[in-house]
Length: 126
Image 1: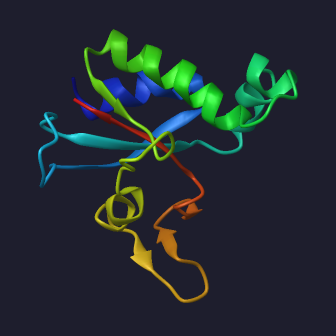
Image 2 (image 1 turned 135 degrees about the horizontal axis):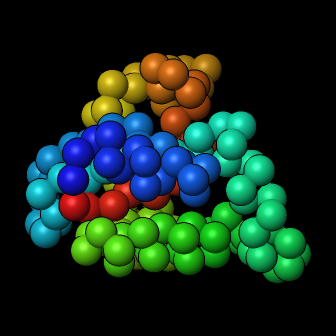
């Protein structure tokens, strides 16, 4: 799968890949791709979702679990979430390895979308 192929797959979900990295631990994936909200398209998709509309707790986590798990299954990939641990995945350090930088004012700043920690949706291992 190419980067462009991945962009085409996640775009209709309101997501975009923000970087890829090679795992440095026991992860079975060859590459971990970080996904983030593709604003403002993301909010149009998410605000119409059953998870957003049902007023139950943690709509973003539930949406991510449903949508990104299905994507990972379709891609024969493994999914990693920053919730549901322990163990918790090191999303902060992953976010800083993709060209983002740490800042006193805003912990992780991306090159195009600003604050990365809040915007990292999830990671998929391909």
